[in-house]
Length: 462
Image 1 (cartoon, rainbow, N blue to C red):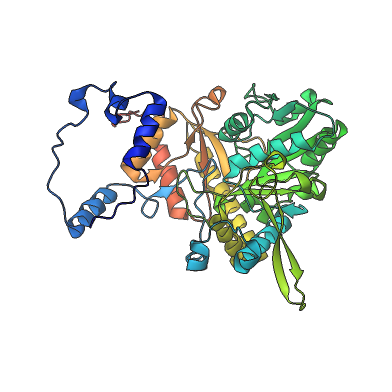
Image 2: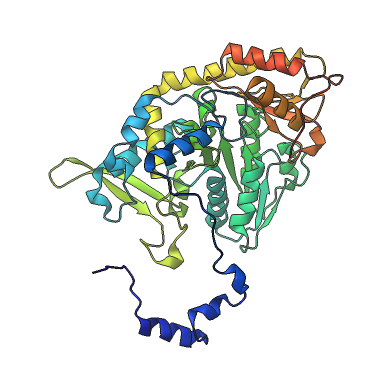
């Protein structure tokens, strides 16, 4: 007897066809020419599992991976060291398979992990509260805008985005908030400094969003950010800051210079570098915004016997409260990535995170100094930087990157020509603790071969 999982009877199907006014299922495909509906496929013979595995391994071997190539590409996705304990913990079946807790109080392990994550994120950012969590750094910024807009008693419709906020984050903000009737601007002139936003901030402004270090790697000082926060608050608006969590191992957390909302791309904290994700949206904010928070908040308490326990204190998703009162549709989110970040922070500790950040700083500045000495290359940083910096190159970055990869097996920097064309042939380079001095010297040697007078023998393919 053949058992099929097919819930529809012939009568069900006929009823559906009658409802939409067609006689048969075939009529649904009438727009496809008959000769193309059931083409004869010239497939090779079926493979055994062993043969399929060998073929797939051969195809995978044609890829270049970062286990064999030096990487100087950042721009929002970073290669940092991940201690082995991270994968050991997140691979445990009780965490690996955990879905969002619908009966949260029986999921004490998951709730404790969220609580620890939130506590460490709050300490790292200097903020009162952190949720757990958002999809990635871009959606966290979009949720910050929505939180800010909803936080004002009287409607405010203006949102100002810094031109040096990650270009993809700005796109996601516009996508997320389309239909909300917001006036989003501030980033029209890519050549302007974020201080120009202050001239556009008024009493209709809901939030000003900046990045520090910004997308071009520039660090804005604590005093500079405090002045910005004061000016924004003078108009009753909120200040949202997107940060690199690794930089917080060295520099002042945003909570200490007046930020109201802090967001991060949490991939750097114990999550593997896979271009496209899944990543982790870190989201922290001041206490007075807690009722506007999306995502979930976990609290620590004691039960009737005085034993420590964890509870889902606040959850504003539409499945827990009335849909009209929900502030977000965050569901499963990236709980496993948040757990990885918590394990990473616990394993590294305060001193370990600082040491990793120091290595990023020193290696990046060594690389910048080497490249700045090369004829035809110009370091474009006017301000301090952490692990990323912009270099003006003597020829298009696409040509340089192809040469670096083909001739040296080096993954070059981010080509800024599309997002910041006024910078010319400019490359955003990233150096982390994972880059060895030999790799940096090899990069400098390779770039030295690519001056204006040199002819690149490789064909550039777009």
